[in-house]
Length: 441
Picture 1 (spheres, rainbow, N blue to C red):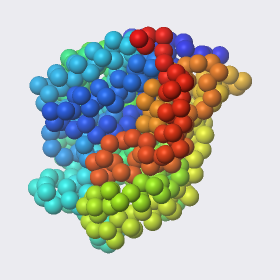
Picture 2 (spheres, rainbow, N blue to C red; picture 1 turned 60 degrees about the vertical axis):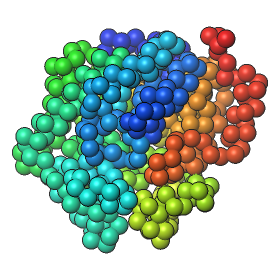
Picture 3 (cartoon, rainbow, N blue to C red; picture 1 turned 30 degrees about the vertical axis):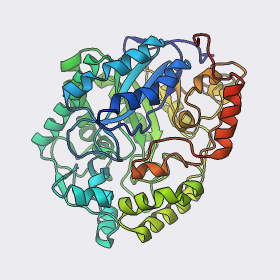
């Protein structure tokens, strides 16, 4: 059995153990406090022993493309150079850090955030193709607003260049690797998905052509930074609504992973995700507390275009919480299938909540499902969580998948645990020294 404490090599870079902090929204933006905010968010994970920190999605263009408020743009090399302070801090703790590169495409705030649209009326939504009929119907009903600019063939190449330029700046700033956001309804998934991609040029029309964008992103990054580790998420759109016929099956996802290995990607993260922005990627409870917070009500109304629209979103959120119930390690089966098909490392995340579960994923008592294990929301609840998980007798994490941390982020609020019982227990563990490591003074 592989142990959580064992090192792992990804693209020539040695990760000291098999635990990683999955990408989350840090809500740091690009202001004067951005680097400090990122250090505050990410350093505790490395200090507690995490082998690899994935910085949450950063946007490769200077305007637009953000799926949520407060995302960081990395198109400006001068700004990115300041992030060397962050990478140095992670390295001081013996950890490694990868940056996740993203553009939201049709999922961007230009589509769904009412106040942002009013403030930025000239921003274009980038699209792989015209919106598919379910999204066009939501546009006609007034729930979303689409006026997309469908990328020409030349503009697709230009977008890949932006990924490459941003990657080069990040590597110059000390990042150990790069992670392409290939899921969560961003523009890369939109290229991969038959739901979104109905192009007739070299970037559409067949599974191989829909993968072409990730291929030229790989070429752009390799041309600029050489052999730096390059990873990506691999989507299977199995949770998509039943009315959606054109989508990526589990078999499609496995084939994408095979082809990515041939292209030259160094690791993959298989995830089951919908074609729409729903709770399939943050499965768990309906976040009563988050929706009831009076301090957030005005922000919800600004984001969704009025209090009644915010109430409609809350209602949809409640229905989806029943549809997408919490499942332990819900991507495990997909990861296991991919691992049997490729020879590069397979990383697993999604609903992993305890050391015993981690050990099973790494092969204890059965077939190994992955080579590395990641968690996201649990690090909002316990920023120094690794200190507990790297103990062989560690139990479960405190995170209850209640999603009180995620919903307020639509207002620009930071990702943090807001559940009193969890915070109370974390305080007790802190006082008991549960988060201390051998390197703490």
